[in-house]
Length: 148
Image (cartoon, one colour):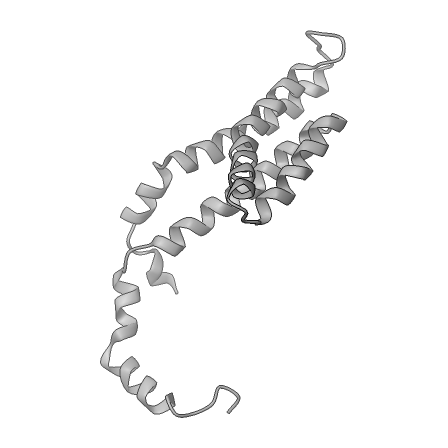
């Protein structure tokens, strides 16, 4: 299990990707927004600087989700983006910017995290599963049912 992390070039590419930068930027806006809300400053009586940062976080991470949902609906495909878009819109309409920012950050992080593992190139640790010992074990267990 530890060997799968041996090839660091995969991770360098991941951390330089646009998706990672977007996830990091959107999520990094949340703690300063919470800190600014504690100060009690307000540019406009109803809108605090913290709320502005949270809305920016929702735009950075949530806008691609909403656009993906619209594209999916136009192609008559339904996926989780529609549900998340409804949650984001409901949070923003109700003024719950923190919840919208957190939900969008979690969803985009999950999509980003899943993507590299699905498209990862074959590494030496994956190639080792094709070793003669592994092939021999596969031949032995080929005719047996999984339940025993």
